[in-house]
Image (cartoon, rainbow, N blue to C red):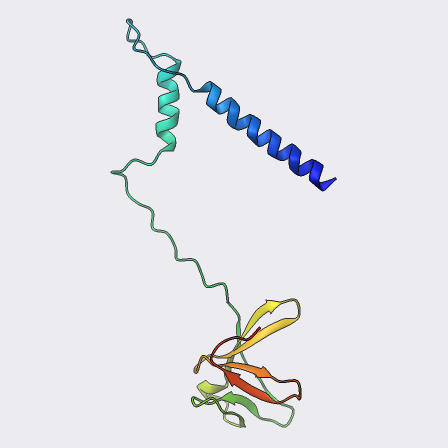
Length: 139
């Protein structure tokens, strides 16, 4: 069923392209110098083409694909998880430390990457449940 719909859409697109090609006319200057259908087609074509002298639109830089939520990770024991500049992971009672901010980046269904905002290190857990840091993502 899906293949039939896809082939139908492809066929319709091909037919539309062929119609556009057949509508293009070869212009010959008429002796009466009146605007014919060819001149109208030229205007139609030129209205779609960006002229070289016109202002360029500023394109926005594409936003990074890895956008996430900046948050603090808090334990039941009352500590904020922090990722130090040297890559060590520990807890602190300090609420305003910049090393306690983490970026939760969605990677897949029920999978997130955890990145330290200040250090740019990634936080991971091995199969035994121990936390470790990495400079790059390993997923």
